[in-house]
Image (cartoon, rainbow, N blue to C red; front, side, top):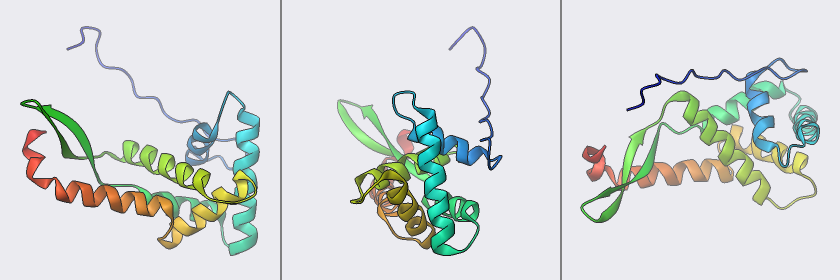
Length: 155
């Protein structure tokens, strides 16, 4: 155990336009090589495309997509008596959101398309409707946890 005490949890900052922490978390995950302005441009372009296509509030679609992709349970590799087992563990809300954002961005990067804003907007709309690559990833994780439920006592 650490003698220094527990680390304080950091709270995410708000983004400048929408004043939303979730948007800022998404921007920080889009970010590559320190180009934050480009990350903001990609996300705001995606939000604008969502607004044009669905004619609804894009932030509600974003929240709905992240809520739909957020897992309750995941598997973690644990070594026990020489073999590695996938042990299902429950996930907190912050870690679940982080996983959901990572899966959404990974699925949108794999999509075929012109630019990242277009791919991200279509992935967010699909996730809000309950389909898409990120939803598939969540279902795979849940199946994996169900299959390895016998190892739950290794937590």
